[in-house]
Length: 124
Image (cartoon, rainbow, N blue to C red; front, side, top):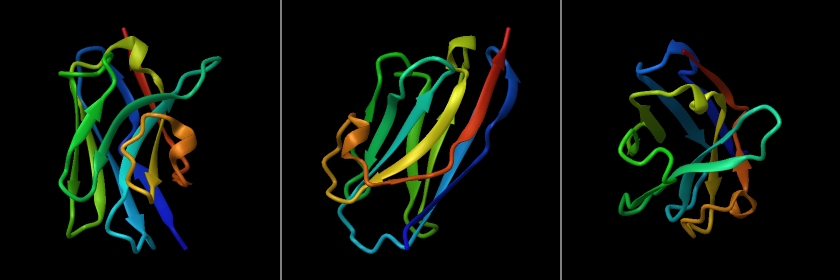
């Protein structure tokens, strides 16, 4: 059974940093992509960042490029997202997801497994 468990969300002021974690278990294939998505109230889910587990190639939405960094710890089977210089518009529920085919897609429909999400709130 595949499980993705996020942690690290919270309430911070604009300009601050947070690091989100996503612990992955039960995913046996080695070729997959981990993605972070976010959804703000009244808005559609949007792609934030993705990382191919094998090789570590990463992708970012333009809105977070240069501020967010996705990374992985292979030994801990955990993916992280370091979020710096947070803005009020970054406020959303952040979810990690796994695509077992390793497509590196930015489309959430390509992802097979999802975590429960963690709330990030950035105040002005």
